[in-house]
Image 1: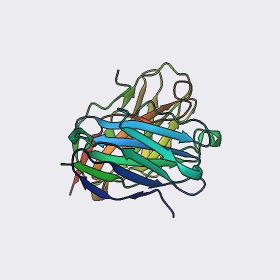
Image 2 (image 1 turned 90 degrees about the vertical axis):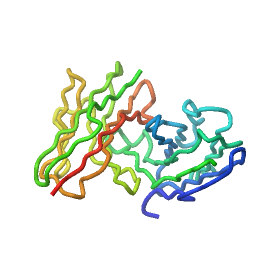
Image 3 (image 1 turned 120 degrees about the vertical axis):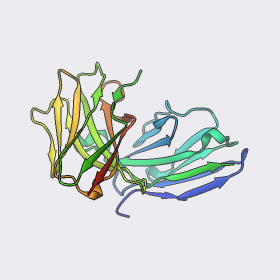
Image 4 (image 1 turned 180 degrees about the horizontal axis):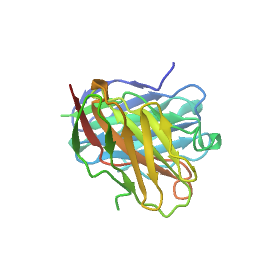
Length: 118
Length: 117
């Protein structure tokens, strides 16, 4: 597609359930990022994939959060045993990658997945 | 420590007027990039403008310009001739070369802009 695609757009789940959020990056983009946006914390970095390198997981808030990127394209963010504080909008972005040069390596965002944990 | 500071939580501006959104940043990395994004009520983050730390000239993109004052660590966004469609949340962000290998973006808290007729 033309832009970053995220699904579902909305997800309501019960506390304790696992959820999977999907991100389909822009074709040809080697870098993929996950961010979380919540009222109290603003925009927080979660995890970053660059090509075949080991991902930067430094922003994941707990071991209940994990992400994978299959075939260098689609990524899935998984939250296990969801808690109410996980309620937020989860944003995915992709970019050409750091080898493209700083000015070309712009991150383009999807519309996000709004997660509500009841 | 907060690396990006946006001191204006909200602003009203009249249509056709110019508006300046403040952003200051904190880094010891000599190479970094500064970004502005717009987030309308629909939620999507829209890239507006980029300024590199070594760029000699201030960035401009249509009605958007960036007032980059490196010594003051300031990267203010100027929107000229505001339009009703400019009503949105605006985020300043930074990416560092050495600290984060040009990876993650670090965002400010945002400024809510409301354009009035």
